[in-house]
Length: 140
Image 1 (cartoon, rainbow, N blue to C red):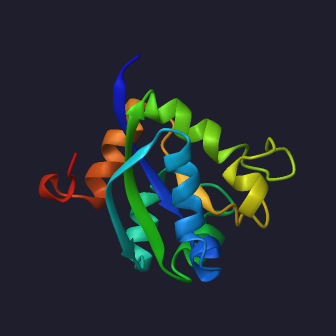
Image 2: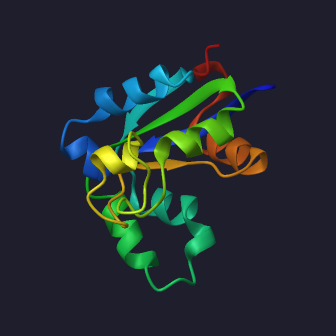
C-alpha cells in the first residue's frame, strides 16, 4: 500500500455547527493524519474557481453561494491509500445512502449540505492541494 496525500474540506454547514474537531477526529481514528489545515472564508471568486468543473451545472450558483456562507476548513490528509480511505470515511454524497459510521451519515444535513468534500483521484488531489496550500504549509 502507498502513502498518499489527499485534499479534504470541512464545509460551511459543519463549521457553523462547530463540528470541525469531531470530523477531524473521525479522519484520524481511521488512519488519516492531518499534515496541513487552515480555516478560510471563501470569496466568491475562490468558490467559482475551485468548483469551475461544475460551472455548467444547474446547481453551480447555489453551490458557490453556500460555500461562501461561512468558513470552511481545508486540510491535507496523509495515510495509506489516503484518497480511497478519505472517500470511504466521508460516505456517500447523499447522507440517506451513507453507511453507518461515516461522516456524512453522522453529520450531513442533506445532499447539498453534506459537511465534507474530498478529492476523487490523485490528479484532483494534487490540484486541490495546490489551490489552497503552498509547499511550506504542508508539514509531514
